[in-house]
Length: 617
Image (tube, rainbow, N blue to C red; front, side, top):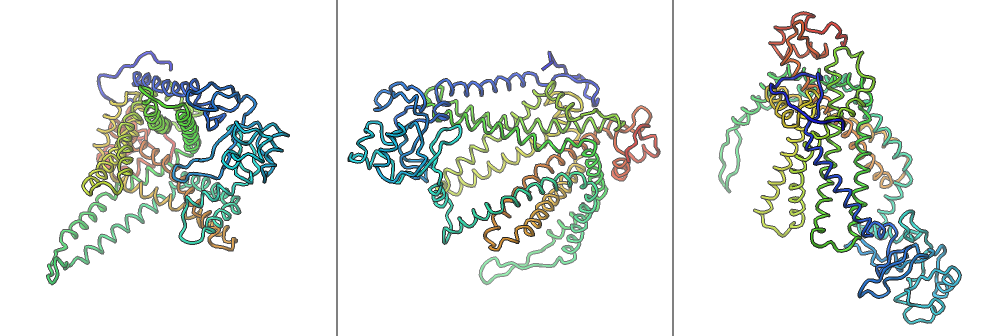
């Protein structure tokens, strides 16, 4: 990607945006080879006919519809010429196996799907004679349908519903999908009358316009909140702080001996001193960290400015979701192709495992690209002294830097997450398969391992995100960037703890605000529906969608805050406000950070701390 080599500085120092070089090039090559392997699996399924069998369909004798077939040894009625029979017809489309989730009916290749309901075997004969499309098994003569004894087992179940071919996949699908509705009722079990399902589905169908409108409202509210949270974050943070302080004071003042029943007839006094001590420590921590809470508010304030200067950041969730959706669709199609290729033996049996690893690694790679893109844009914003001279499209510039220099770093970071996620998924699968069979010790051990891997994955995700920001600043490799970022975070451990605790709670309140606002609007709009059960499901759908949207958008906001803090920590470590070492930070961040850093206050008592071109307020 325009790279021919990469060198690391021998002396570690932070030099924001001064030069650019390729990072982790071997990992980029490894990821490229892996993606080529994913493509080879898709090519294998096409060559072996798996893709064609899935798209064009096949009958119960192994013949692919719409083409000339070869004889399969030991399979009768195989090797037929189905050039003129392009559609798959099921003799009993409503005969669905609930356990295996598949149609049990015999399938045939036909030249035309019945467009009208056929009630008798005489109708089957007439349809075959007029249209040349025989709906009974191949060995039966169409003109003998009404009198053959095999007509009840090798002809379609009467009446044959009218159907039309499914687009692309060429399956004859009944126009009346009542049989599939019955299947849904069997899958979704209700305590009581199954008419509840009909009423819920009817409520969703009747309210589809309102549901779409409310989903759009959730999108708009999320975008607005990303900009205005800079103004309401201070209120939310200080309300939270006040509640914690008042709650701690209340618990401390109410400390008294408590009694517990340790065995029948015996009471033992338990001192609540330890509990009171914890409350006192929590109260002191809140009082001690109040200055760092102000720093959190300042970071939220500056993050709001970032979205004003870089409005295209709000499109990142859409782009990432679209990329993931396209990849997942491709992955599912290739998996279906593999399933219809035939029996995979020998080394070929590992293709499915390779494909499964690709799902995790490439999905994590796409998410990591989003983190690197956002980090690159925010770093450019922070370390550009004159915000009026930002690049025309900082987001596009960040994407280009990612593609040209840092795809290897993203591939390496996402692979590390994959190494942790795959064992956790395997353990979750084992736990699910052994549910009710394993003993208490094994169950506890499995849950403990799953929990530990989940915690490790979350920690690595946070470290990776900061490593990407460090790479965007210094253009160093993943390991070097991760080490540099880790050192900075350890040096600012109290600040990190405050920002994560308070910031996460504020963002959680933001999600709740979006969900409740959307739900309130939904209640007002759906209240016109008379039956409560009819609009309960639409309201639930809207609430779930609004929370998902809020989570996606506010996750971008959280990334921006974390990257801003790393930039701020680097700025305060290597700059002191003297000429030639002016701070890059925003004035609002500078003013609020002075209370948190006494050394910074002693070094910066005048406007000399600021760059002469810093005009932000």
